[in-house]
Length: 535
Ligand SMILES: *[C@@H]1O[C@H](CO)[C@@H](O)[C@H](O)[C@H]1NC(C)=O
Ligand SMILES: *[C@@H]1O[C@H](CO)[C@@H](O)[C@H](O)[C@H]1NC(C)=O
Ligand SMILES: *[C@@H]1O[C@H](CO)[C@@H](O)[C@H](O)[C@H]1NC(C)=O
Ligand SMILES: *[C@@H]1O[C@H](CO)[C@@H](O)[C@H](O)[C@H]1NC(C)=O
Ligand SMILES: *[C@@H]1O[C@H](CO)[C@@H](O)[C@H](O)[C@H]1NC(C)=O
Image (tube, rainbow, N blue to C red):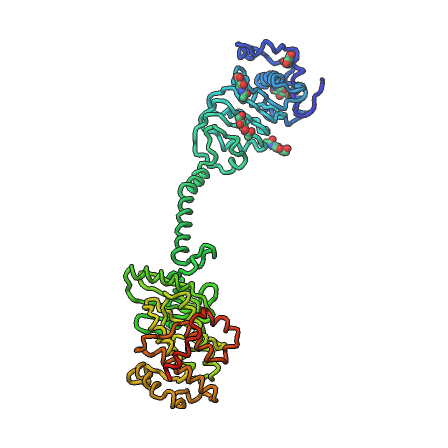
């Protein structure tokens, strides 16, 4: 034991003869004060410092022999009491866990901490009911890695800024103390030690951080929720077309959607305007082109409700020759009906500009008859204004009926009359409204006047004719006259109309559509009667 290597407590051999059990009694301070360093103590520690200049007391030249001597005695006892395995050579830990009687005493030996042995890496003073401020003497042991002061009654401010001294401290436990709730905003400190080090210690890890979190939670979250609600509300009420498809109300368009579709109702997209009705061409978000018919009439609330109800019916119409009605917009300022955009001209211009041949006209007449019957059968409540102007002709020559007048009265007789006018126009290419002084009745009179003897004048002159065509035209005109005969109380039924048309126009009757023509064959053989009545 003559020589003990680095860092170690090299003094034990000098004092090993002193019996420690007498120390640390009630009179311990007195006892310590009475102790005198041995005469050769100066030379012993001088030697030690030459061997190991890193011993803490070596820095305190000139030596305070008395102080150093006492600290070695405390150290040796403390080392032993802490159950270190070899207190002659090493002193790695202070373990005064649950020793409330002696822990405060050791803490009071300032001289000990001043010369804190460099081998010490762990200090445990937990569960000792220690009172007062944080034991700052511990900062002398700058090399420690573990410090446990949990379960005490330490109070006052935690000297956070001094913890930088304990640069190798990785474990800290200050839980269950009464430190004052000071505003500790040392971010670095709370990054080193997590909240488990401060359970019920009075120390609030980073007050500011906490406050930010609290602010975020208390203000940020509601704000977030409110903005989400506002945003979703905006989506629902203004731009539902941005919602996922399953959340969209399929047929309801908002003013914002229409505005976006028409570039803010720009004049460029205005395709027609009559009175309070404006027609726009628009492009929806999904890229489909639509026709937007806007009614700027100030409708009563009740009428608007009815408009929506009728629109709900209209969107269900489904026929190859009906322009699909996509939906409606019901707004305090205006109503709108949105249909698919069908390019191409209407029948009226088609007739005057393209002078279609009989075969093409027959196709149109048949298709329109089919739609008319479909509507009568399936949707008797739906009104429409059958006119050459309201039927479009698609690129492949299919008529597309549009303009379902929602607020029409659905009088079947009127519909039959309109259908009669339609087919008369198809043959004659005359505009009853423009070309006859008395309008439609003048037109019908003119047809009656020339029928059946003057077919040449009645049939559109630009159409190629042969015997079959002329006779078919005569049949159609005769039929048109029956339909338009206002005085005739016994108008044909829709099924009779369909049957008559399809059998007359046998060109088409071989087509697959023939099957669809016979929606109902009940009245199928009555047409002879009407033909008879005309001749
Ligand atoms: C201890 O010894 C050194 C020389 O080794 C001397 O300078 C110093 O004064 C001595 N101190 C005391 C307190 O005797
Ligand atoms: C160290 O403690 C043991 C009991 O744990 C005791 O027997 C021994 O005398 C003590 N040694 C010193 C030097 O205090
Ligand atoms: C704290 O110390 C007391 C005795 O002072 C003991 O009964 C108790 O079990 C200890 N608690 C812990 C957590 O060590
Ligand atoms: C911390 O540990 C490193 C490496 O073990 C050592 O060099 C340094 O001196 C230690 N710091 C203190 C304050 O003891
Ligand atoms: C500190 O001590 C308390 C109580 O004993 C314990 O619950 C906690 O986990 C400890 N903290 C750490 C970092 O070990």
